[in-house]
Length: 258
Ligand code: HXC
View (tube, rainbow, N blue to C red):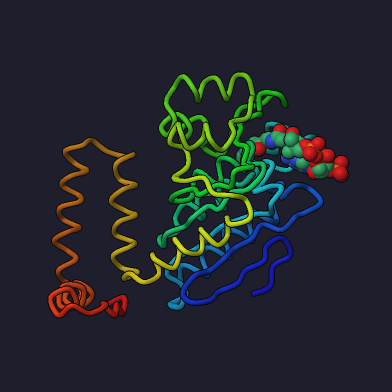
């Protein structure tokens, strides 16, 4: 499927989705969000995909929602319409692992989109921020909730109230990103991580993702029970037999997502 605001490439069980609005710092408009929801849905359904990498350009992952598109909207337009709601929910429903490879600006909705992914690897030139307050609005794609869970209340509150940007070192120090790499090697490092994931069973990876995400939704006791039942359930898969047999036979496992 061809997209106007994305470039999608699939190779060796990894789908790379690149946000591609270079003239607007990859600002998220309705078309991009709709295409992204569609592309992630397609990757999720494609047996030839086991991991997804979402990225932008060296200058910008995404500089937020498109301000030109939002500027003249009314409350009725926004509330009565569907400004990104269905598409962002579709993005969040992606079951396969999604790595955000972030270089340059990840601001507002761009920072929120990166936080919707399963983990973030960023380049040393990355800048994260929630500057919506400068525009007279608050975050609208989960930024007040996710940033607070990831970096704690004090830093999240400061970022949202002042609109200041966080650099890559601070993002790593505060737990927003898993790792910082030189900008020139960002894609190489993200692809290495994706390739490692793509060697595993897609079923097991989806279960891992469900279990970790559950920790944000429930109590510790319920989360641990959920994990234990998932662990039990994996014994119904051929991939569990293959993974354990391969270990005992000292060979590499060949997972078939069954
Ligand atoms: C529309 C944008 C844009 C945006 C940049 N551009 N960000 N267009 N929406 N969010 C456009 C600029 O208008 C400009 O177009 C071109 O991209 C290059 O940007 P410059 O500002 O000239 O570049 P620079 O001086 O390097 O500054 C980069 C920047 C700055 C720091 C990223 O552009 C900026 O502050 N952008 C806005 C960031 C922001 O406030 N994001 C939050 C949006 S609200 P022209 O045509 O002039 O060359 C949000 C809410 C989400 O995200 C909730 C959704 C439900």
